[in-house]
Length: 259
Image 1 (cartoon, rainbow, N blue to C red):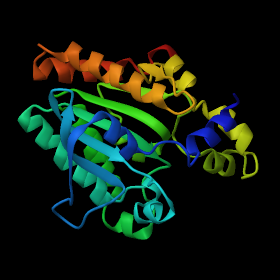
Image 2 (cartoon, one colour; image 1 turned 90 degrees about the vertical axis):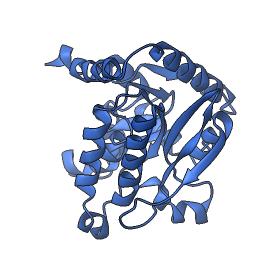
Image 3 (cartoon, rainbow, N blue to C red; image 1 turned 120 degrees about the vertical axis):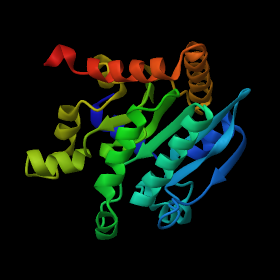
Image 4 (tube, rainbow, N blue to C red; image 1 turned 60 degrees about the vertical axis):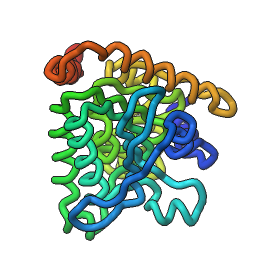
């Protein structure tokens, strides 16, 4: 499949949204709201639940299930208050020793005037800074689009996976075509140049694995459950400092063969 076809597949409205994954994998999930500063951001879902017998913190960039829901959730593009909400929950997860599970599906963070006025760049930067130092396991999966810093804010994780038709990129192919080629119509060429597919990310060492989707995504639910379970089992017995140092080492390795 070509890179641009992967882009279209990742954006397909028939793909399960983040809430579908939470419903399939997390029991007794309780969503919590607000960032304790400004308001609640529906694009960022945060809460507590059980993954098997483990109590976990769940964070998700949620695009929405239908048109009214997508409008309410700003199509998964989180505002600064969304990232501040996720940051608060990460800190609580570390305080109480809960693993953090992240589901990523966004074209990028909200980029309007209001978001900039409320400190979008700082909110994302604080997420990245704090996430890198967490002393609990952080597991992330890109289930659709992984766009720019909006996605990275939930993917500076101990382990990252992608679904086979998901994409992960510094910016959209349309944006790249406009900037690099000065022609928004060259989106196909831009998609190839961005190296945004799951296989590209695996080759670069950015992710740990590619998860099959299957026709009805039942394979995706099953494969992701197995990946999360294996990873969490591997962290048993490790100290918080060992978990933090392992994450630091993971990111230090990125790009090593390309320097």
